[in-house]
Image (cartoon, rainbow, N blue to C red; front, side, top):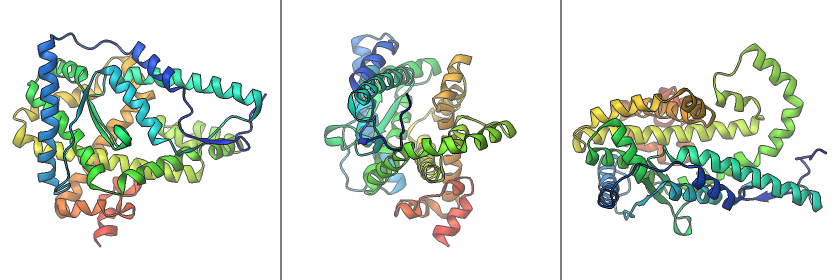
Length: 358
């Protein structure tokens, strides 16, 4: 039996068994490092203070967010991050017009099986990431999806121990990155809705893309034989239609900008407030690229290595623009969706400068 996605009913929201995803992730995620209650309490206080202090430094450097309140960060354990991640993704895709199963008894069964399988897959992926993520700003988390800055204390402790760096310095360094992300979404009043609409447009194109892929499959196979994809992202793009690829280009450009901006801020603020920042940056960059063969394979499959390239490309873009027109000139990027860099401009910042600054 085949299911015609083009005629299947369309629903909204994440087609995943939420409870199963959380249960799977929390069961599979490894336990964090063992610390005493006093050490745990000290780490929680250090991270909460670090998030508050960091945002003040970020605001002073960037000129963004003056007068806005600074919400408290939420310090969580690994299962807490997994629960928040599932809820945040659900909120992000709440209005996305995703394809649904066909009507009737068969469709209902297909829907339950699909949701369960997706729940198991999501839980397994989040278990892997849940032992590695140090912090995250979720624009769609927290009460009424108003945004939530999460700091994963066991992972910060584990990374600090592995890197053998100063605890106060490392906590503040981590918080600088995440506080920058929070400020991006709170100071730029249109960014959250724009990001959600782009994700919804991308997700809504899955059924059209799947249908078009069948027609383009011989062409895709020839292209793969002629020039094998460089990475997982290149392979994904081969299976997308023109409309969905255009949305993906915009999303990749935006997320690369956000990561590069955070990296730039960390490097600019760091030397003044984090005495051992040079040591931390060198050791952390080496750690990002390290790991066992299995770990590197999983990171590639999950797009983590692509994320690392985003950090690097985005930082080069931001560094170049700031060197040319200063931070005030860079801040023109936050004027509207039209002033965001195009994907091609991420690797050609002079093209963005010519388009936006003339």
